Length: 410
Image (tube, rainbow, N blue to C red; front, side, top):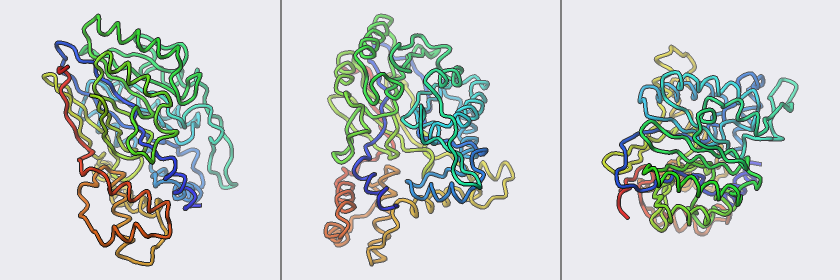
């Protein structure tokens, strides 16, 4: 099962950062915001049988599901401490769209709203009408209620929807104007009439919003769960917005220069035709990335950091050793879950594990070249893994955790 998941990952995994676009105007206001993605929150009330939860997590990509509540609390404290102008969660808020999980998460996010920091959310592909919404009980797994589009908006009404400048009629997309004058274009393709794609109705609405922003002289930031760009040839279908080129045409026409998204679970940055997209890795896996984005003097800067769950646990007098050493726990859990098959060489096994972790955290540039081991990878019996790892090895050496661009250049 573990290998089946991995092969599915290798075939389907495409970097999910459907992003934050910025329209260049003569004077770009200074602002800052934070973004995270793929929290995959599961209510503790749905985890009666932790062994079942852990087993399911180990068959996935190493999400630390059983500590989702504590991770969320640490994330919230991080955001409040930094006090950005907004906090944006770009989808896959819940593990599999459980209504109870959505309701609990929305209540937690109110702490950020109450601190005077607007929270903006959009759904991911796991969040709506999910038939796999389950509870892990001592009697086995049991189906639980998921949420409809309308219920999602009702639950997260405080998180962007109530105060939206405009809402799309054909999806859960909306525009939110920050106090700085920056407009956040929240693009949804999971509650859309065409799943995974932006409908013609929504494209028309998006262009109308870009025209209004241009007329008002205000920059636009666009966010989505799925990606705008193809980040690697192996990872395309099901991850990039299906008709993303139409969005890119609009972004180019209206000077949108940057994008931010999730869905891929990997940390990656790519550029095409003057548009740069940063995919933030899933906060629910190793390193627990959250990104800070600032706009100052017309320059947009992006930088990831890790939510320090270890420090949060110590501050709150937690006794669970896994939480007190969460960064190591999350890394070990990821290593165990993502690829457990031995090649027969301990040296090669360690190299593959570290290379894979580096890819997910956007730090392949820190891995020392090992020509002999690279050659062994090319001749592995597991050809799917070999193709995947060879793709990783072709990465440019770029730091995938930071970038800066000018928003005022044409």
